[in-house]
Image (cartoon, rainbow, N blue to C red):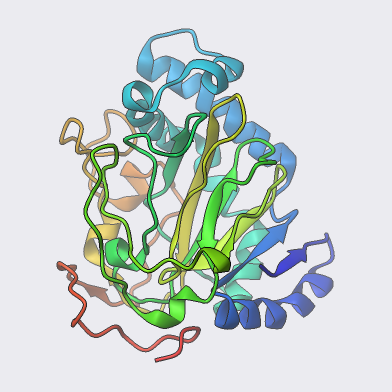
Amino acid sequence: MYEFVMTRSTADNHDLTEAARKAVREDGGFVLRNALPAKAVLRLRSELTASFRRVSEQDWTWGELRRRARADDHLLGLRRALFACPSNAELFRHSRLRSFLGAVLDTSEPFLHPRRWLRLNEPGGGLGTWTTPYHQDHRFVQGTPDVLTVWTPLHDCDTGGLQVELRSHHDGLRPLGERGETNHLPPVLGVDPGNIAEPACELGDVVVFHSLVVHGTAANQSRYNRISVDARFQHPGDPIAGEQLIPAVAPQDERPIGVPGVDDPRPSAWSGDPGMAVPASMPVVPAGDFHLSRPIAPSRFARP
């Protein structure tokens, strides 16, 4: 998988963007080293711990979250706690990352989706209920296929965090298999083990990939929980599915996943991101059930 190292020099980073576009066109994504300041990631980690203490009414520390949080019991609370963290918005809006992704997408102001996800993966073989099997984001995000997912761990991730099937975005939507008893999603079929990349990341590194790229949770071979967050960017002139502008509904309790206690439907309110503004020029389209015969809009990065 292509890797690029960001510096503090805007000019040097700008020189990398054409290579990054090529990486998305060829492989479907890339690893961006030093994309986020470590201090910014640590700030989010601290805020998340404090926010989850309020949500759960228990005296958690970050170390305890890594050691004894359980996805079945705590993942939903952590996801809601994330939206109550000011750094949830600030981290992904950091100028170093935002300007780079904007250049890749050929826009000065890439649109950051209000839905953001926290992942908690316990040690083991990756078969837990809330472990994500191989899938393609476009099936769920819809709108334009040229949505870029940005994934980053909240700690060093030496054993890998996710697995990406390189060049899989050129295949369109893949057929699905049967959902297993231990998982909440049916897996994508036809994954080639020889094309799997599993990049290790340090604090501040991100993995960027196209919405048609097949990817899933890597087995957590460490002794501690793996905790990561991800967000999505797109060109503001491309269509977005309307449901991406409202909070997702948790299957566990059928309540929205957003800032706890906030019922305001505006994306800037429920997402806890006051900088969130939907461009007037952005087409908002309805979402629908996907089937393999449904055509996918042309892409800047994937072959037809």
